[in-house]
Amino acid sequence: MEERRSFTAEELAIAKSVDLTAVAASLGYTVKKVGRYHTLKEMDSIRIYNRTNWFRWS
Image 1 (tube, rainbow, N blue to C red):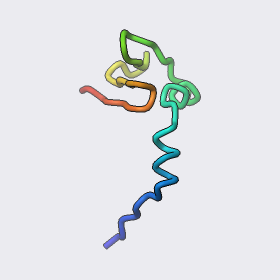
Image 2: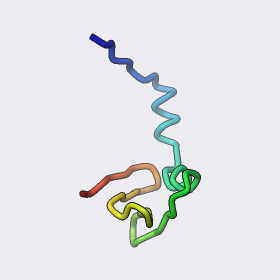
Image 3: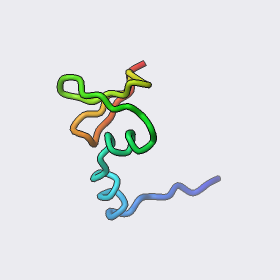
Image 4: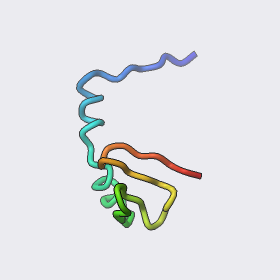
């Protein structure tokens, strides 16, 4: 059985500070602001809130 690895507090802090819209743009996606959230032209079911939280609706 594989051991589950926990993340350190530092790793979690770094992950929480990432701007997801910048990451998506750097990966070649077209980021679009729609009202209070951002979405991707290529995947309109993705919702990025506050630039750090995301949800996928299917």
